Length: 93
Image: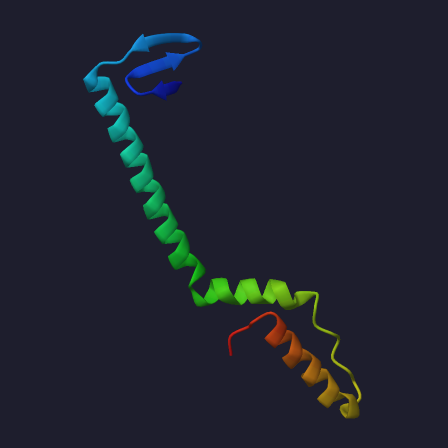
């Protein structure tokens, strides 16, 4: 369905819409926009939870982190590398 001003085109057949139909169409669009805004707000709240942030950063770091060495002498270099990755991925501390 294509709406152009007061004319509604459905499958190439165009008819004049009444004022009531246009108002109904506008009301439906406003309700759809309102539902989408509510959905966006809920999605933003969900993304701000600790569990969501943990999963997001865990997935980002999963394949980036080097394996932890067994030798204690290599630990300082390992932790420097991990710290640099945290900075690179902007992981909050």
